[in-house]
Length: 116
Image 1 (tube, helix red, strand yellow):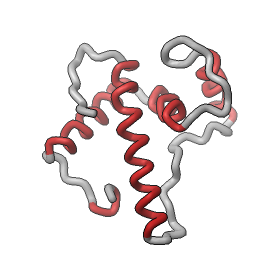
Image 2 (cartoon, rainbow, N blue to C red; image 1 turned 90 degrees about the vertical axis):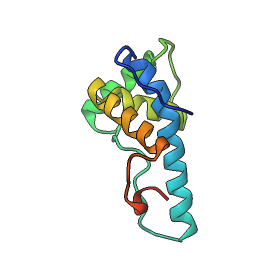
Image 3 (cartoon, one colour; image 1 turned 60 degrees about the vertical axis):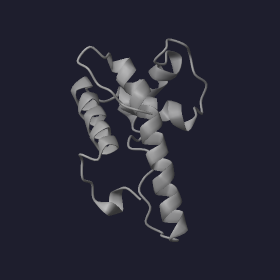
């Protein structure tokens, strides 16, 4: 999926573009660490929904997801990524979108161990 960012993109649009990219990246990382039989694997999620404050936000998200419809727990991985991204400031989402765009064009150099 190509990432194109403009200042007119809404937070929801950025989340919809970024979520599949981040989810695929997590899958690649999991496959890589499983292939090398590593016991040290990066965490799958980056927000702990069991934290009392985050739990309140998570339950609210389940009642009204990005498109306004309720979700049933447990939600799928892609919806979980969307929830996590929805917790980030729009400026952070724009920065992430720009970084993923740069990675696609080869302009951004990342550490090899971070991108299997």
